[in-house]
Length: 97
Image (cartoon, rainbow, N blue to C red; front, top):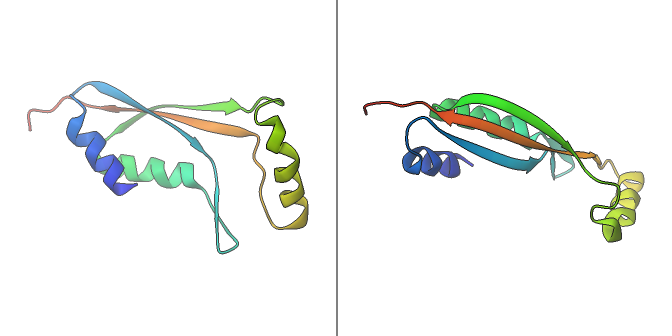
C-alpha cells in the first residue's frame, strides 16, 4: 500500500481528492488486521489530508450467492464478518514543490 500511496501522491495534482473503497479487515495467519486504518495511516504519512470516512453498509442481497459460505466460515473459525465497507476521502494540498 506504500507504493500505491506514493504513486497517488505523484500523479495527483494539488488541491485534488482521492477516494479509496476498501474492506475493513484481512486475516493473516489467524490474525485480524484492520486494513482501513493501516491504509489511512500510510496515506497520512505520505502527506494526504483526511476529508471524510464514509461507512457503506452492505446490502442483504449483495453477493447473496456467497453469503452462506461467509456465514459458515464465521461460525466455524475465528473469522470476522463485517457488514460494511469504508470509503476514505483524502486531499492532496497544493504545494509549490
